Length: 164
Image (cartoon, rainbow, N blue to C red):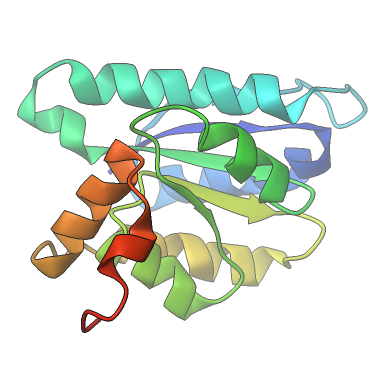
């Protein structure tokens, strides 16, 4: 997996740590967005859009290698980044605080952006969540249809009552 990474000032320290961790694990960091120093302010919507546009661009190139491009966004809680990221068609971003969720957003939701919160996660938990995200693979099958519904913006209520 290759990553575009970004943070606002609330996620600066965790961004720096996780960029180093990705490189140690052998995952190229294609770009890094956000403040150059911890005391420099950055608006999370701007960072989220910049990172997600790069993810979409690299995935749309049409190369088989584009499917291995993902985003990692970090702010204080991860929530603002996720909200901004999910406004872009083709982006499926999720905030996680536990390993099961980090695995499931990939396995069931085919997430292409992971959002983390520096103010709510310790460094070791953040590394664990990133590892779980990386190690998971989209299962396809019944989940592929649901991802298509998300992409179309269909009301998910139409599928209520079906087995999960």
